[in-house]
Length: 131
Image 1 (cartoon, rainbow, N blue to C red):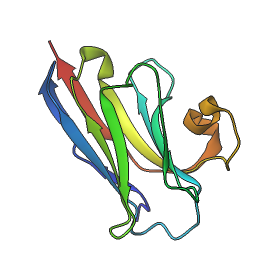
Image 2 (tube, rainbow, N blue to C red; image 1 turned 45 degrees about the horizontal axis):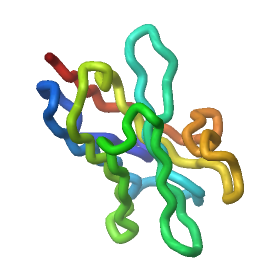
Image 3 (cartoon, one colour; image 1 turned 90 degrees about the vertical axis):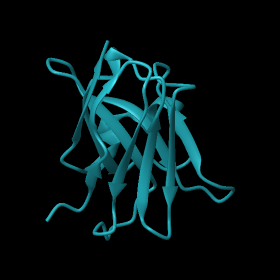
């Protein structure tokens, strides 16, 4: 049984919104961060957002292409991570994956969106944005 399970994907028109959820309740390992990645057909999987636990409060990181439109958050009580996606564009189309792992503190911004830094992956949920 998958340890990370995404949900909330689907078809949406450009300018619309979707909220993705990642259920990590079966994930029993420690992690520094939870990341969101996406992959379009014929393209590499790219980091979209990540949220990392820190002493002073969670830290969030976003790809330039989604800054101001996407927001990630997490509920420790529910052990769930969310990705709120607003003002969606056709370029946002792809399979969206959540992942657990991530680097420790003090790394460069891009490291927190680097797929090689994440160990455990969900199976993905499809997001299709039409004009």
